[in-house]
Image (cartoon, rainbow over all chains, first blue to last red; front, side, top):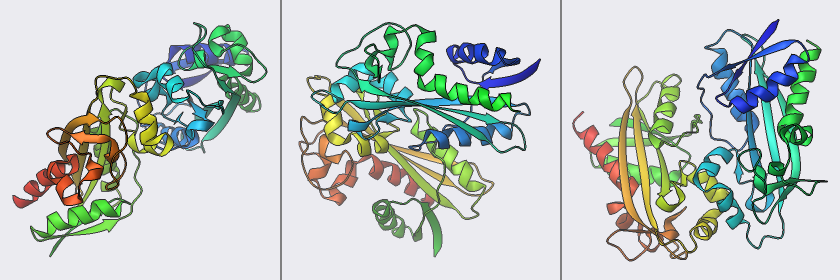
Length: 185
Length: 185
């Protein structure tokens, strides 16, 4: 069975990818491998920089993923720094910043990157547009899921089952593109 | 005259350093040289990573500086990402997050790093402890200066002249340590 390494410390992401990859006969193996994430406003740049770094130190094919929540009214905040912002001020902080804001548009973005030694990096982007709620709702998922309602829905990501969320989530979409790429390899 | 290169796009920082270095007979030359800034909670790590990168591409002695505002009540936010947070939600956003907070303690930190090919990197840290104001005050300085009052003062950094601010500012202190280091070289 063909193998691919998922460079991440997040087991949840690995399980999600494992299921999808098994459908096309590829085994996903989690690998913790610290790589530098640069400060930039672009998830793509973070991913490409990470892949280039790993390519110099690891001789197997691998994938990594980076994601962020971009809120229009806050000029893209928390964006690329979503994880840091979540662990410092949390959903409560973001809701506070959005108090009295009429424009509640936000986009969740996910970028998968694929790397292999001496090959050009590949990038797969998924987006989910929606709005920021007035308060937290739901207990599923993680991060900003309780305050994000995707368009054409009335529930937050945290009020959905994982499988349901992934149908139209940012990460579901980028993973789908990644899988399509592997199908034609 | 001995020369040192200051890797930065910020002319204000260069002028500040130029004055201090001229006192010990060293000329400071500004150099724009993009280097990767990694995502971490530590300014020191950002600086060391940057120096190592530049050492591989530049054969002259150089310095760089990174700074951030760490607010206790917000678990260190905006910290290492102070610049990004400033350009997205600004002082107004930070004040909003601090509404009704009794604990207004904050620390400005500055890290100067010195690098030279084939030599170990050196780090010089300066800190200024103080509080976050209830509203913006003053027009001098930049960034979070209008909302930070250092201990033993009643005015924000933005209400002081540059020379006065630098006596007890974070950057003034780290620069002082850097100068001391050069004195004994």
